Amino acid sequence: MVTVILVSAVALAGIGWALTASVRVGIFNARLANILADSSKAALEAQEAFDGSSVGSPITAETLARDTVAAIAAGGAAPVAVSLLPPAEAVPGAISAIFTDSAFWPLASPELRASAAKTPDQQVWQSVALPVAGVSTDGSDQGAPGVAVAQAVSLLSNSYVLVMIYDLTPEQATMTLITEVLALSAAGVFLTVVLVTWLVTRQAVRPVRQAARVAAKLADGALGERIPVRGRDEMATLAASFNEMAASMQNHIERLEDLSNLQRRFVSDVSHELRTPLATIRMAGDMIHAARGEFPPQVARSAELLATQLDRFDALLADLLEISRFDAGAAQLETERVDLCVVVGWELEAVAPLAADRGVTIIDDIPTSPALAVVDTRRISRIVRNLVVNAIEHAGGGPVWVRVAANDRAVAVTVEDHGVGLDESQLERVFDRFWRADRARSRATGGTGLGLAIALEDANLHGGRLDVAGRAGVGAVFRLVVPTEAGREIGEPPLGLALSSQDAEALR
Image (cartoon, rainbow, N blue to C red; front, side, top):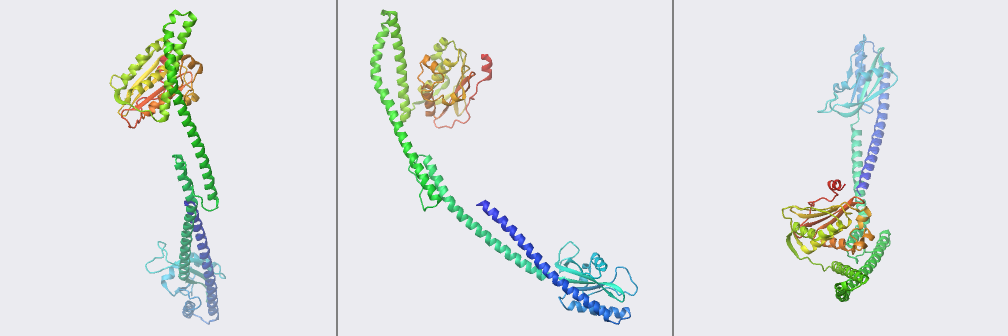
């Protein structure tokens, strides 16, 4: 709408300027033609009067000249002033200057007089500013518009310049009136364009805005929203197509939701149902494992493998049950104000045997001042334990750095290793369920592929975040950030998310 209005304004201004200039030139040329015809006739009559007279002295010549100038001023197109000017250089026997109004004397410029004297048979003219009350004609102010016409005449064998000055004020008034009419017409046309543009734009934009509102509601989950279809124009066709698309999306989303609900129920039901037979199998497995010393070596080894796989199966069922709680929205926090430095210290002590078995050194940077936060201790411990265990398993025998820091809004824990690392595609999927960066390694270590997914859900449940960064062959760093109070904005985390160059140098 703004574009149309601007283009219309520029176009109207251009057309108005062109019309005004054309009308001004036309009026001026028409008036100038009349003036030149009248002045030419007056000069011819004056010359005939001079030639037909029998004057013999300068006194009678001056009387004749005065009468002729007065006659010209009173007749024809009635110039506002008439002057008969003597030659520029003093000539014996020449009469003095004669003029009807001394106020107009300065308008006969020397250039105009000289040009007329050089071309006796031709008229010369120039535009002048006529003196009006309170307005000077010295160039500092502009008076009323006028035209000065000059032509050479002869009297007693001397050449004189006859100057006639005409007033163009009526033409100027006509031009002003025409300009005002054009300006009012342009204003009317401009307002009409604005109104029509507004109406057309409103009619065109209204269905688009309505479609945008419906699309926003669809994005918010109101799948039953539709655009009203009115008429049979292009917008109605668009609305009908949009409604068909929305209905198709609604059907697909509802089918996906039903399938997702079915999958969640299946996982939950299977996990619960497997608990009972697993308990029975575990009892039998524990008895066999306890008596493995009485068995042959091959049978004893089978008993040990049975116990190991039962532990792994039990952990998988526990993770599946936890995931089903998250999916069902049944996970609840049991919060208390605790010192996360102490919680991290507990977990480092718990995983110390695993680190020693893998030849991994854990380097901790835990402050002595408390890092207090209102959290679910069990879930935070599970996140820290999962991150540290993953770092130990993927550190490649190198050290693992664990850091804790806090500010007035959040507490952060980072776990960093410089082992196999993660590339960009792995970073995007590291929190996916059942996804493993190295399937062979995961099978060897017995992971379920759900640990990081559960850790992410635990962090989100606290209103926190779990981030990861890394490079393949260089290492990886995980950062847990939780607010100090429930519902508080985290703001800038106390610890950054980047591989430490000092740690990399120490590793080399």
